[in-house]
Amino acid sequence: MFKKADFTINSHDNGYKIIIWSIIGIGIVLRLFHYFNDRSLWEDEIYLSTGIVKLSLSGLLHQSLDFQQKAPIGYLLIVKLCTMLFGSNEMGLRLFPLLCGIGSLFVFLPVAQYFLKPVGVIVALTVLAFAPPLVYHAIEAKQYCTELFATIIILYTYTQYQDKTDLKSFVLWGIWGATIVWFSYSSVFVLAGMACVLSLYYLIEKRWNVLLKLAIPFVLWFGSFAVNYIIFTQKNAHTGWLVYFFMKHDAFLPLSAAGIPWLLHQTFAFYNYPMGLSWFISYHSIGLQILERMAWVPVIFTCTGAYYLFKRNKRLLLFIVSTFLIVFLASAIKLYPFHERLTVFLAPLFILLIAAGCQFVFRRETKNVVQYILAGLLLFGPVKNSIAQVADTNLFGDYKKAYHREAFDYLNKHYQPGDMVYVSWNDLPAYNFYKMIDSMKFTAIEGIDYRYTSHNFNEYFSKLNTELKLFAGKKRVWILHNNNFDIEIGDYIGHPKWYYVHNDGIKQLDKWLATKGKVIEEFKVDNGGVSNVREMLMSFSK
Image 1 (cartoon, rainbow, N blue to C red):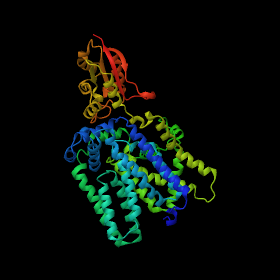
Image 2: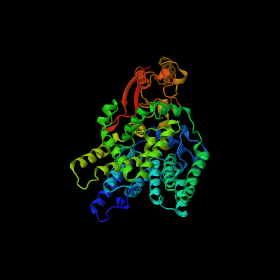
Image 3: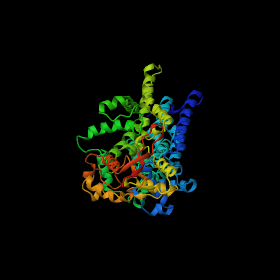
Image 4: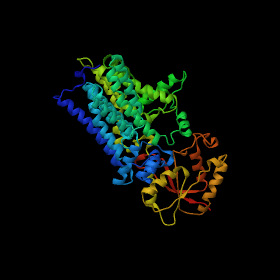
């Protein structure tokens, strides 16, 4: 285990303090910049936010959310309070995640200082502050930044209580964990990993009295989780379409030889999301991805970090490994998908591992240029990409960047009396949400989804034509449809098969609409951004 001197910083080193607080300050500025940029909600945010806005505090406790959404009850109640105080809008819905994101930076500092030397602390905080996915989730109206913050708080409680043996400390530790599980589903994995390492450590040490006392926090943690699960989480916990969705996205560990390449693939994917260490986002072959994303750099620091912790802090290494193994086990039995945003909560643990690797590289008293180059290569990606996303906010969030509000604002501005508005079925969640929180000059005709009552595109468009007949001869008809999403919540991916055989349903719709009339004007995104919403004013033929 590390010596205490390995964790303490030189309080007289003003340069170190300036670097640390500059990193935290820039991390806060990045999050505040994107928060006040106030972008439109994207689809997943809309699905969850619809229920939060519609339901009262009591309703959130007793009713299911729209669109089969699920989120920790603590998160839902706090966000609802934010909307009641600051308005049912994007900023009100994102305030709690923002506070969690900023809080993460502050609480992670003592955690990093406990486990790492100054160079490791700097690397760890830089990744947390700049990683684009972690910045993004701090300004997303979803629970994932709260999950990240929960992991950091659990790590902080570990630093405070792991060596304590008095009854009061165990009770306080138990209360912390018991509270956290009401705000974070994934916290149970981190708590379980921590329980494993503590139990094993005191078992090996044969400290039976301490092992017995550990039952206090363990019972409080997992008892609280069980109560929460029975009362709230189990509602709609097993949805077949969602399991199928994540199977299609390869989010479950195969219990076969295929599990080895799966683990390799997921490791490289994890470096990109949520760690944000990629230089460039590439979806080519695995070889090109490794080169273009510079994935070999974090591989070096992962290996050196594991070696360094094995030599110096086996307990922390076991904590990290145990947590990941538990998550992989849950993935293997299809209880928890190992996929992109659902792994955000693991980022703090992996950051500590990578930072320890960087610390290993800098272990010698004599520093050389290679050490600084390697550290620079590691941090270049997140820093470069976060700066790029400030310079061009259309890049922020990648495929999660949406323009629903901008499209509706454009329509409101250009709408004229007598205009007709038609919203396709695949953009109705956005239309109904923004109609609920904003005033609109128009009431749209809501399109019907004919996919499941049709057997081919000819039949599909024939039925759609019955809706659009009333536009015949009209000179100003606004047509809105979603360019990216042509699936509804509850759908099984790829069904009905005739519609998705070539994954070109949206293109087919645009081609068909072109035969019905002429596009007069169209909503465009400023600065070359690509809108996820196609909004066009058409003149229909008779």
